Structures are given as C-alpha cells and as structure tokens.
Image (cartoon, rainbow, N blue to C red):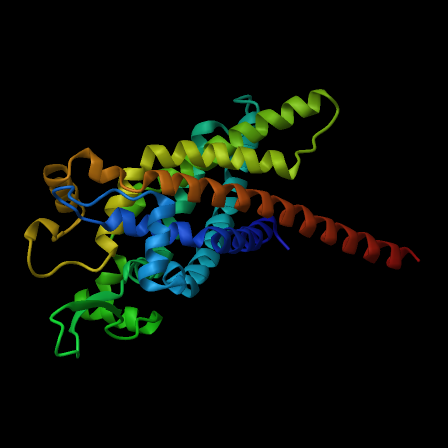
Length: 336
C-alpha cells in the first residue's frame, strides 16, 4: 500500500471523527454566516445561545441537518486532499533531492514548495467535492418556518406561532431544489471563493509541516524523533487558528452564495456572483458582515483540525506498523 493511499484513508477516517464531534458548531456557524440583518437590528447571539435557540425552536435534529452528506463530503474531501497532497509532496521531495545532487539546496522541501503542494491538492479537492458542500450548506441553513395559525377558540383573537416544516428536506430534496434553482451549475456555486480559500489549508499545512519539522529536528538533537499525539493535537490547533483568522471573510462569502438565494423582495440580499456578494456586503453590512460567527468558527475549526491531525497521524503510524509486521512475517516464513 502506497504512502499516498495510507494518508488518504487516514485523513478520511480522522475527518469523519472530527466532523461528528464538532458538527453542531458547524451548523450554528453556517447559520450565523448567512444571517443578513442589514440594519443590524437583531440581537447578536453567542454560540451557546444560538445553539439553545435552534434546539428550543426547531429541535435537536436541526443541529445535525445535512450530517449524512457532510460525513460523505468530509470523507471524500479529506481522502482526496491527503491522497493528492502526498502524491504532490512525493514529487516535490524527488525534485528537491534531484536539485541536491546538482549541488543546489539541502534536499528538503522548502516553505514555498510546501505551500504550492497544499494549494494544488486543495484545488483538486475543491473542484471534485464542491457539489457536496452546496448540499450541506442548504441543509444546515434550512429552517422550520413560523406559520401563523388562528386559535380555534372563539373567545380569543390571539395568534399562535407554530414551527412547521414546509416539506421534507432530505438529501434528494435538496439536490432537486438546487437543480431547479440553477441547473447543474448550481452545484458549483461559491467555487470561486472556495478556490481562493485553498490558501486556508495551504497556510494550515505549511504552518503545520514547518512546526512539525522544527520539533522533529529538536528531538533528533536529543536522540529522539518521537512526536506524541498531544503535541500533534496542539500543532494542528495552532496551524488552523492562523489560517482561519486570515481567510474567514472568504468563507462567509462562500456560505452566502451556497445558501438558498432570495429571489424576491429586497435586492440587497440577492447575489449574482462572488464580486456582487462582496460589494453588497461591504455597502450594506460593512466589515462586520465578513466576520459573522468567527468566534464559533475558530472553536469548531481549531478543535476539528486538531482532532483530525492527531487521529490521522496515529492511523498512519498504526497502518505502517501493521504493514511492517506483515512484511516481516512474510520474510520469516520464506526463510523458514
């Protein structure tokens, strides 16, 4: 089994576990990003308050809206990303060694090369999996709409506000909804800011690889090359924090474009494309609009990335150990 396949499978497994642990935070964050209170009249809710509001008004299940396609998307995204990351990384390492033989460089992959490798892997991932994330965003932002029902009691004129689901909104309903709205191209909404956001995982992995390499070098000086799961967790958290703060505005624009578009009413909330969304957000919401829900995202993404890195590295170590033991057993059986 190749290193690329091992890393791809390990990345998929780590991504699924991280997604399961942090999904309610992701749902709340997506809703915060897509809120369009142009006059800022709504009270700003904290992460926990927003979560409680969803549970109270719509039930626990709404915190897990779109979980099934999200898990499939996470497995696909992490698998595709790590597979191609390792493929491109191997090529970069081979190129660095070739340069070293020519007397150029020390044979290691530099920071710029690491950034390029991560960017290429991220671009392939975005183009292949964007339709899944359009579906997930639609399902996360789908709400039970309030419906006015007049009380049947003749002595009361009060109206009760009852939360109702207009129709089932499962995966297939969402796919049909996206297709009816914009055809096949609708599944690639938000792909431009998402491609630009490739810089997020690129920065994340550049920071992670750089810190990990330095840590291993320090350990090597002490006669050890072992990095613990806890240290990997912390490195992943720090790397993701730096990348998230830098690229968050693009994530908000992407979510706005992928959510169900307003086709009637206030044209200030209708987005024709990436540039139109950015200009309208600047004009009507200011810089505040680009950072909605950032505190929630930092908690969710940092925790998810840290868990993912920790589990992925442990799975890779376990897989390589199993393969090594299997190879040793075969060699011993042949010798005997």
